[in-house]
Length: 533
Image 1 (tube, rainbow, N blue to C red):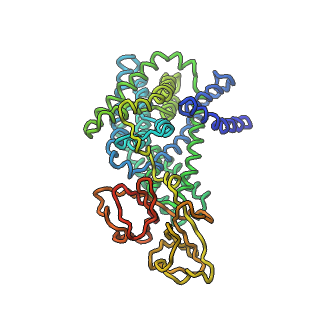
Image 2: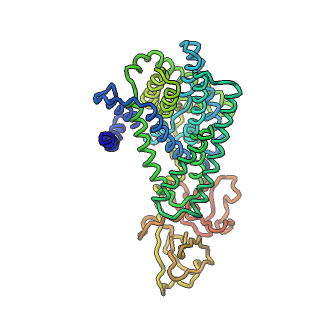
Image 3: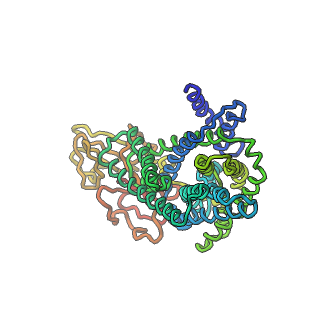
């Protein structure tokens, strides 16, 4: 036990040094954790004989739950809406096409048995969101045609399809597959996955708003519990837990939740730690000598997947959407493989037993994909003219609280304060501020001009960061709304826009400027409205 705790502590401290080293070397930090695991592993310097596949499968699967949930939670569906059809097509049909092409190549060219060939295609058919966006964000690469959003949704949502194919491959390997059985499995995987993902998201939002006591620590635990339950419930019924937890994350992340900033910080830390543990464990159980033994087959499969099956399936599926050729080329090359592929290979290994070559080939493939393909991705994006300097890459709505000079200022109105008894419209607030919320006892009020202030009210103002902030207010639920050219309110004054009850435009992001609005401000195309609800 002490050795295990010491190892985890070393891993946490190593993350700081490895992160700096990754910036110097220009390679993803997660790759270094795999290498670190190999150094500690059975054939490394420390020779830790960690061969418990059952435990490895459980630990890595738990890590993948939080990674999948947070992938959905941070996905900006509104920003991805223009490319959502392409993203979903690639995440489903694209994964199937890539898998079948790779499987056929392994079967007909390398002459592997069909069940093993099918498993090989299945476990390597999905792309890795963490690998793709670690590279894009570290180089601050903005991409044309909403390609960052396309990749974000595709790579974040295609693991459930790959997992489903892996389960079909396991059934095929064990001689339990049939047409009817496979059809039932697919229906259960997709049906229960969607049902529980949607149901748990809306149930969580209801309980979170009505029954759960406020407090960031409990909020974090409650949402974390949702991620786990969203995975476990469909799994009990043969459903796809990864699909369920991803869908739950998408719905919750794109809705209104209190303390969302704290939730983002919590899950960002948890997911980072889970990724570290996951990649370290994968390195720990790796058998480098076996990887070397299968090197010729691994290299051939990797090259075929990278330059044939992924590009062919991407081209065939994106062409009907009339996607530009340079976008198709970049999406094809951005199909980096990551932890999920190795996790699914270990799941298959645990299920079928024996010395499964799929695991060792997948390990090599992931290393190649992250190290070689990932390192070349920024240069490739520039080569095919896909870099847009004016685009903020993969900006989710959770990012703006850190990027714009806006803060929340709150103060209590004491007895006898000159504002007491006046309506909001009668009060002269400081320049560049706007009253966004009033807390009266346990009640939160979104004010309008007719709201009358009372003794003991806690008034919250949105202001530029140049103002002094006595305390941060976490009870404000903020949502972004993008104003498009064909929006019926584009060009109208805010005073002319009917707002739902308890809803207020807190501030407007217009290009590089932040506007604390009044009723005379006219909305323009590409404005981002930050709405308090």
